[in-house]
Image (cartoon, rainbow, N blue to C red; front, top):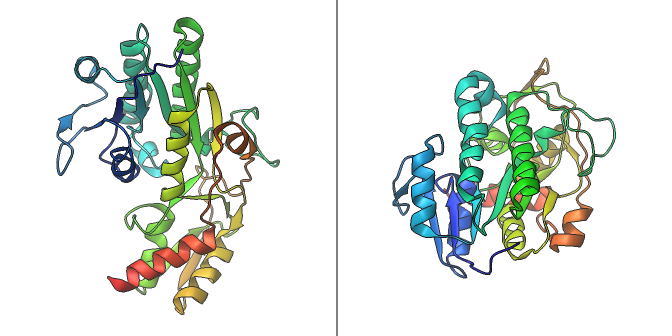
Length: 294
């Protein structure tokens, strides 16, 4: 059962997605953001590896909805910190679920397309989960915990399986970092060379969560643009828009990364009324325009 209480608690609000989300939520809802290391506008500290801190903040805020963005993300970071990843991503999710199992609180969980692993076919929400890296494994276990608590305790939930985040807001991680470095004249490394990516702009990701808040349906939803583009094609788009020759080197693919990926996003469009608006070309243009101003 979904609570009519629309007070919202966000775990992991200190990250980029959380920061952008808080700004939009504040225009419409009563919202409290927490982060492991307080700073800036976020005053509420909560380490999700500590069960007591989770229970205390939930008791204090008494939310109707919890948005769970906290955790170790990034394939390389997860592989380099396996114990921390398991403790934070899996046990952190369990502690949140355990704290709300007897309460009327809806949980929105930010998962990842990494749960699918390799697939020669387009994946939908019913496709087999075959993660090839610790990031995907930890998300899959978290999803399983959520579904178990839903069955056992009737917890309302939405699991959002995001594709690759990017955007002008981010210069320090992922493909955004790669593109920014390339515009600074640095040679970038491409692992494999045949990657096909489905990108989700941060602004679209925020809007997907906003739609999830209003949804009365439990379930899992793929969140992406819905069209895969080769990384080398994205580089050509970047060169054309920025009028910059991009220097890159192709190296052997890494076994923790999926090279080709296509995702079906029709369920989110139908049931959440969500559709990504920012195409990769539009997103790259926004990135170039902002970065050139700086």
